[in-house]
Structure formats: C-alpha cells, structure tokens
Image (cartoon, rainbow, N blue to C red; front, side):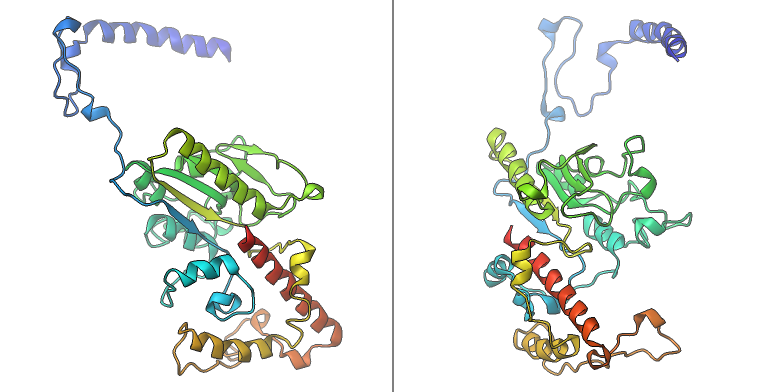
Length: 352
C-alpha cells in the first residue's frame, strides 16, 4: 500500500513542477477580481471582495424549526387535544396556527420536502430510506440540484444547526466507513447532533455528532433522556456561536425522537395521564372534534368519518380498528396505558 502511494506521488511531482514553472500569476482566473497583480508585490494591489463570505441582511432573524414525529392535530392541547403542551401553547398564543398544510404521510419523504422545498420524488425520497430501490425518484439520495435550506442559508451568512432525527441517510451510509455525502454536515449544516435512522432508544440512543458516532454523555440512572440531551446540545451550539460571532443569525432544524416509537418517558410524566384514556379511542374522537371546531382547526360542519371508512374488499386487514366495546378488559388496559405513555412522552419533550 505504501509503495503504491509513493509511486503515485513520484509520477505527479514532475507534472506539477512543470505546471507551476510555466504559470504566470497575472493569468489566473480573475473571479471579478478588481485588484492588480504584478511580478513585484509592491506594484500589486489586493481586492478581498470576491473572496469575502456573504453576510446575512441586517436584522435577519434567527429561525428555530421544530419537527415532531407521528403526531396528529387531535393530540395536542393547542389544537384541542388532551395532551398538555405548555411550551407549544405559549407559541400558539403569540403566533399563528395553520390549519391548511400537507405531508406525504411518510417520514423520509416529508422531511426531504421540508428541507428542500421540492417534491419528494425529485429528492429521491418516494418512500422511507429503508425501502429505497433502484428506480428514479426512489433511490433515497437527495441530489445536488435539490439544495437544502441549510445550504441556502449557510451560503448567505447564517449559522446552521441540525439537532435530532435525520432519516434521510441511506441505510448503507449509516456506518463509520460509509459515504457521508448525505449526512447533515454535507448538506449545509455547520453542526449536527442526533441519530441518523428513523428511530432510536430514548434512554440509550445511537448518537452521531457532526461526522462521527459518539456516546451519550451519561446514563438514564443519572437522569439521561434523549429529549433533554438534544435540548441541552441545541443550547450549547447557540451559545458557542454567540460567544464568537454574536451578530450572525442562526437557523436550527430541531427534530426530537418524539413522538415516534419507542415511546419512552419519565414515569412522573406518564403518571400525569393515568386514567385519562380509559374511556377508549371511540370516546376520544367524539370528545375532541367539537374542541377542534371551537378552535377553528377544522370546519364547523365537520362530521366524524365512519370508524372503519374503507370497505373490507379495499382496506388492508391490518388497518381495521376494533371498536372499544369489542375489546376485553386486558386489551383496554393495555391500549389505555399505551396512550398514557405516548402522552407523557410528548409532554416531556415539550417541557425541554
């Protein structure tokens, strides 16, 4: 291996020497250079304008984009739901709530469209990265012609940070020895801290910082949870940037593991919802729709769809939802507990 490398170097050196010897510094590409280049430095004049990085416009805002996973509007309190989200409620009370928006109903495709502003087939993310295949639009790699918002803002004077979930890295690239072309720091983000896949254990996550895999700073026995860790890291990145360049605006793409499975939350947050879902999902539908209407989230004439709206010959058997009354006592207890954990996970993440 060493001989091969040395041979390449020996072959290259004569060519490089010849090239340098024949080059004239006055013939280099000008790149809008308005200075003067002469053989004598005393007769030359520098011009830094073509090489100065762009600065963001004066008064440019800091932007925090928070993307929760697997959460319907009917879940959270600002939209009429039962899950208490005090931090989100403060934002809603002092901002805007949109009721007309669309997703692709899948993770990787939706994230790719939000990152680039392009259709998910153009970004190569027709489906989640785990099901990528060798067809146009479904290969799982964001092409260079689909610039991310990180790349646009980075080149225009913003600091850019990506915290949390990715799920836009092809499976074969999630390895130390793999390509990193689809990792966040190659897609316009100065710093990254989070997990590359679609999900991870909230107590013992698979973490990456910038371009390398890393270990969590401490364990759950000392209070570790990924939601808290991500919030702490986000604050650290912003503090680091402000300490050295306080006038520079920043953009942060913040993607917690919530509310994607596995649903992990401290017991005290789960206990807040004990018994709140015991009446079942049938009753919850009837309870939440009037609340969503009152908040203007859905139209006043909205009617609940049938419990299983698709006929049996069209729907997948796995999509069939059994009415709450048809469940036995153990099943009801299980599903109520699942809802309590889900709600606790969501509120805990909102807390940070």
